[in-house]
Image (cartoon, rainbow, N blue to C red; front, side, top):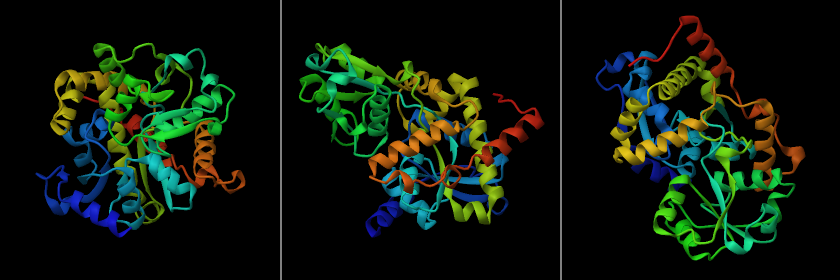
Length: 336
């Protein structure tokens, strides 16, 4: 915990402050962790750049931190919100006093590719190894969901973590050193352009399947929900505005993301086209999706089924419901 706190302290030193031009005493200062300055977090960048957080009386500090740092920081009260909801959810299963209050996307843009010897069906991977990013992450959870959809157990395969970034997974795909690997569409495009896919085959594409999971989203602490529910509501409402802006205005969203990511327009546009297709309609997912996520993550952390908390102890979409109701009552629509 001491190392994680130190890491967070370092990251806080490179935060980007939103709404700094407004009177400091008039706005509630809020820290939110964001795992990557990428299009996956466009709703938050939109909410900053379009002034939605300011409209809600919030002065936002973005802390660039992944789930391994962000979740302990949320538990300890060092930040108010965490956008690594998947990491937070695993902690919730273990008893952390947190809740997922908004789900931005209900699937990742992932593809499962296999080497030529393992082509044909997902079942052929039984007893073999799949390359992911890190153990227990959304790569692994998604693979487990894929296996379930094909009548298998998530433990029918083994998982090899190759670390953050795509370089190692791309290398595994090029060399065929592992039977299967999880890739992003951008990874696949790069491999195709360089002839790196060889005789590999696509076994599953998240964008073409019915598999759903709470992916990107927002988690906060039970303490904040109890002590300042109005602040939680305002944060959720501003984020929803940023999400609805994203679906309405592609080019301005791309520009808003580029202001933070520093990526070129082409790659940001490619990312946008993928991410926008994963967004939930209203910031939540059905109870059936919540329960499946809980079951699979419990499997990952070896938590017995009878120890899985009730859904209302892990998810609280009441703020999403209230925020959407107020936006509808106001007749709110995103504008340039």
